[in-house]
Length: 103
Image (cartoon, rainbow, N blue to C red; front, side, top):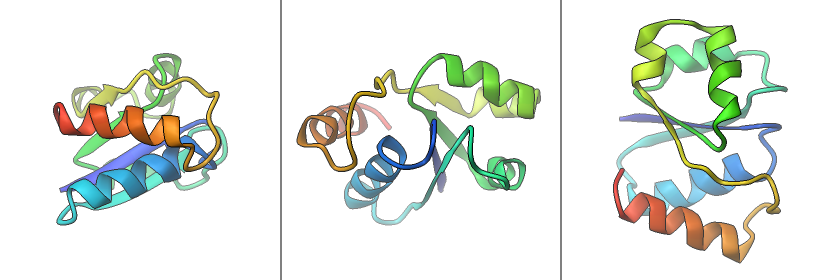
């Protein structure tokens, strides 16, 4: 399965989520990007089977880029605030709990 994580800049939450997810589900392909910074977002959206957003408002931005119902149906919001640095232990704990309690 192709898994995509989307955060704001692709610097902190996205890379952390991709790393943790890959550790838990090593057979899946994983990528991350910043919804406000990545230039190849449309291609990557098509590649993904499942898209994880960090915050609710990112869904609106995502639908501005690609308003397909297909995109909407493969998207899940993780509700992780933009207050963590890359590999922050608290962020890792939150993500592990979310991934282990339901992919």
